[in-house]
Length: 293
Image (tube, rainbow, N blue to C red):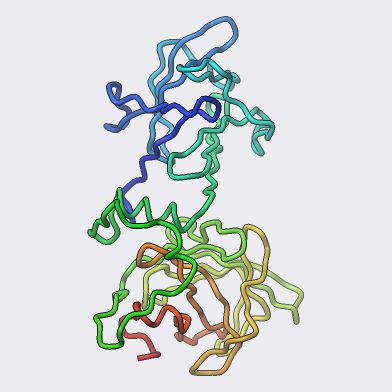
C-alpha cells in the first residue's frame, strides 16, 4: 500500500511536536530527543520511518547500553512501565499525531518496537490522505469519524469501487486488530482437531492470486477444523455465513479498502477459491473476477 510510512509524533507529557524539520534522517523529517547514557548527555535524531533503525546522535552510543530519553521541550523523561519482551529494557513511548503510540526499546541494538492505534480505521484514513492508496490521494477535510460506523448507501447504478486482480490486501485480525501480513504473505494459524495438530498457512495477499504454503499437511478439498489469528489465537471462523460454492464454513478477516476496514471472507476448504464481502460492503465495493458477480 505504501512505499514507507513516516510517523509524526509528540511528547506524551507536554503534547508538543518532537519532529525536527531541519535535520533529516532517511531523507525525512526526524524525531528529536535528548538522550543520556551514563554521565553523557546529547541529542539524538531518530528516523520517523516506521521500521527504520537509523539515527544521528552527537554522543557515542555503545552497543547493548540502555539509554534515557527526554523531551527537548519540557525535559520530562519519556518512559513506560512495560519492558521490552526481547531484552527486558524499558520501552520508550511516543504519541502518534493520528492517535496511538509507537514504542521503541531503550537498549542500543535492540530492534523491538510496537505500534498501537486508538482507532485503526481513523489511522488508516489519515495514512491514505498522507501517503495515498493505489496512487490516489484523499482530501484532508473529510470527516474521519462516523463514516466507519455504518455502511455508505449509494444508488445501485452508481459506479462501484473495484478491487482489481492483483491488489495487495492489507489484512488484519478482526479481534486484536494486528496485521496478518508477515514477510509479504497472509499468515493464518491452522488447527486440525482430528490429528491434534496445528501449524501455519501462508496465503498470497494479492487478490485472485492463489499461491499458498503451509507448515502442516492439508488435504485437498477438505475444510480445516479451525482458522485462527497467529497473534491472539482467536478463532476467525464465523457461524452465520458459508461458502457460496461448496457450502463449507468460512473465516473472516479485515482488509483495508476505500479508506476503511471491511470484512473479507475466505473458504476453509483446501482448494476452494471462493472469497467475498459482506452485504453492507457490496453497496460500494466489488471484487474484480469475484465469484459473487
